[in-house]
Length: 168
Length: 168
DNA sequence: AATAGATAATACATAAGTGTATTATATCGA
DNA sequence: TCGATATAATACACTTATGTATTATCTATT
Image 1 (cartoon, helix red, strand yellow):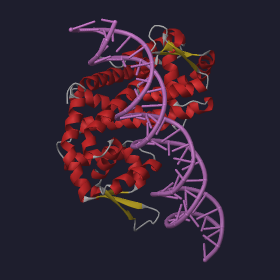
Image 2 (cartoon, chains in turn green, orange, purple, blue):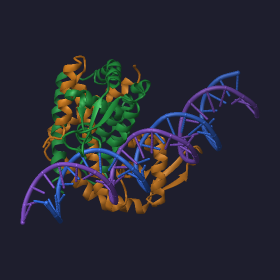
Image 3 (cartoon, rainbow over the protein chains, first blue to last red):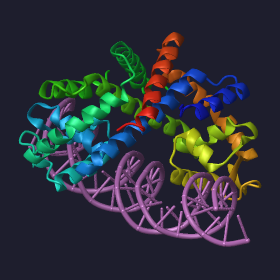
Image 4 (cartoon, chains in turn yellow, purple, green, cyan):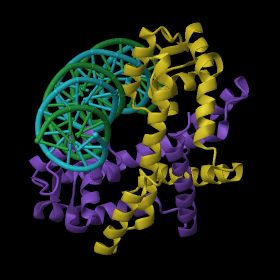
């Protein structure tokens, strides 16, 4: 099964019609999109029984990965790759579920401090086994050298995207 | 500049707290998400002057890459990587803008035929130079061998995601 | 030919995400 | 110390995306 074939064939035709079209970058971008959607859907399916979705999972895991399980919304936006307006909504949801807590920052009164609650921590530890399984299954056919190489290439790609903001 | 650092550091801490957590797959998934978001935002910015957004662009390009500039919604969903309900909405928008046309399929009356209009084709050819520039800029630091390797690894990854549906 | 079960597309309600404006606080330079 | 500018978070309206149910048509079996 090759879910990318219909896309790839059409990019090939595009190149014939419009020779300046850069096939390779276009293929990479499309692959990224397809993979992203797949991973997103898989994660949502796994997480549903716990009452959270993939973006909420991302938020929780970024808090779990922070010393003291504490950070503020703008740091969270950077870490989770979400826009700040979306962070407000997502953290509202997580507060409603009592998985995180919002308190005022003592140092800078513009800031808000978000902290994982005991309930949030317990939830993370309960879904992590399934998440670890999922991640392992999704990459089961990649050898560790291949993953390392993929990581390196994706980082290089991302670094160019970081720079490209300057240009244009 | 390294926009991935905050994420990566948190994944490292996660591995310390929860040793079974598979760092490498998690890093790959996060990198994919970050890159996807960046590429999506860049494309939206470039396309705005033409009155379309990235998903609409994806649809138009898949039609452009099809013989006869014609296909039906389910093929389009596969090719563009969108869910079918979303295809209905997106193609409605494109019909409203007169960039594509909807007609009944003669063979199978359940089906609908979508065709690029002359206006749609003209629009594509007017934005393609900018899109080609963007794609080239976004990948400017990758050598062609690196892109080929990235393509190969991403395809391998995606093929596993295609299979993973069977399992679990 | 009738029915059962698949497939194609869409409608509708709801969820998820974003742009822009707003409020509050902080910082910097005169 | 004042005022200008920057930063942090959020509110709100709007856009984008999805799940589920529905309608219509097709296919296969009898």
